[in-house]
Amino acid sequence: MTRVQLTDAEWEFIGPYLPIGEYGPYPERLRLQFEGVIWRFETGGQWREMPREFGAWSTVHNRFRQWRDAGVFEALLEGLIAEAAKRGEVDLNLAHLRRRRIKAVIPEKEDQAANRKKKGSGGGRPVSHDAALYKRNTVERLINELKARRGIATRYDKTPDSYLAGLHLRASMIWIKDLTRTTH
Image (cartoon, helix red, strand yellow):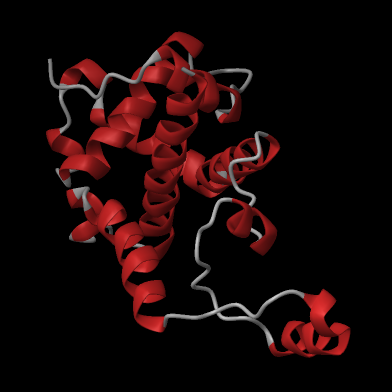
């Protein structure tokens, strides 16, 4: 079977963001259509080459365009980040990093440095910034994760909106994997 099998736990995060109109789509087909969109961005294949098990390629492509235009992929990503924040998995402030003995690599803002100096010894220690570590470790890892899917890496999409929707979808799938990993 060629389709991307979303787990039930992963689908629980996605399902509520997909609109169901008065005349369709049929709710039981939403999951297959969504998996068809994932297939498209993972393989970089043409819509017309989509395996039939996702449904008619034109239906899946139209559904993708409707979801893209309605902002579904962006809303999904924002909702997942909000869920992660609610679970305390996005709190990366300095106090959190220091408690876990993680060296911060994000540069400190000038106004924060001034306030820290003004408070004296009670203002805490300055943040060290390793520019090379910050750029390589954080940014490149994310880009590599995003580009691990051929449809994103090769940018086959003709419109910037479709490409951005694909990026939102890929980022959402990264968050979903992390969120479902922490619930087990």
